[in-house]
Length: 113
Length: 114
Image (cartoon, rainbow over all chains, first blue to last red; front, side, top):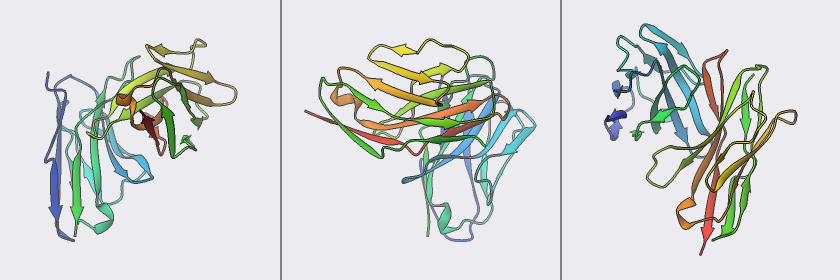
């Protein structure tokens, strides 16, 4: 199993550009989520999904869109990048049964200039 | 609201000694789970230990154990016989099945001194 994969690992954007961060998992996990990690702020939940076709907002959803057309993929779209979105982004997945342990991808470092 | 608070931004421990990292949480749900994750310089998030709220017994994983005080909403992590490889950021997190949300604390950076 590859686990949770994220692409790209690094990205630089100009203000106003859009892009999609890719996330995929091969563990047949129902639950997938996106976080951003900023110094001193920990990980903050952006969006999450409990299954294909179902998404919901987390703590900091503004400026981001998600969709979940398949169980495996959960892309995060930045609609119009802003310097405040400079961060490290993590995707994670888990079962929704008794375990509830999340498996994390390696992260994407995004810089918006 | 679901919150997780880590009040120690940084801790230091001598190699082979024991250290305890603090975490408090708040939730109105009765069905929840608590976790400690480790993030080394590689940035990869690694689960250290988890605790189901309905279990009274404290979880233990080798040198890592928790002190789960449900009434006080406290969930501290004890690392025994600290090793250089334990140096990392440690995040406390909670999950409530009613909200489907994981909430993380701000982290504690652990330094291990040789």
